[in-house]
Length: 146
Image 1 (cartoon, helix red, strand yellow):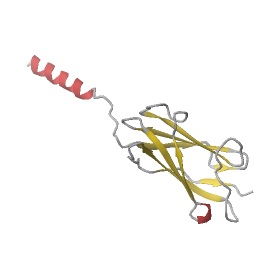
Image 2 (image 1 turned 90 degrees about the vertical axis):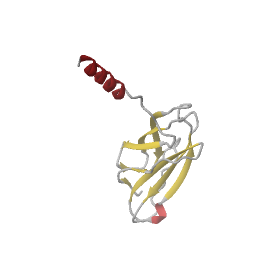
Image 3 (image 1 turned 135 degrees about the horizontal axis):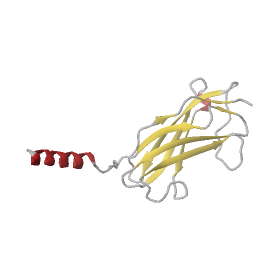
Image 4 (image 1 turned 180 degrees about the horizontal axis):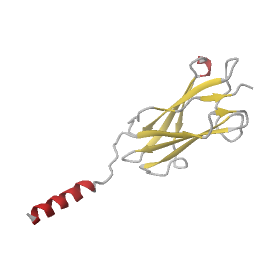
């Protein structure tokens, strides 16, 4: 009886101590944004986290969606070089920053209609073998019209 309990206990320990495993298809999780109302001269920072079994991320797609002003909608692709994502990183946070009339940052874009941009952002990543993550979405962001 003691041996049966001991064997069962050892089996539970081995099954409970499973090593983390990542998929070959990258995964992306939206975590946060530093502001939900953006004024001219400010920087917006989206925090995402990713996992990828091979650690071979290639690019991130970022789509701005404004349901009430389609002229403000954009889709952009940014390549993720070693300066952005650590070489062969399999899991990490990813900080995506845009400036609203701020030098040194990619432009978030001015509102194209006669009112503030009330929009959200969608993100997805692709690895070098063309596996695509699911698309994640931000909260609603308001970009103030100047």
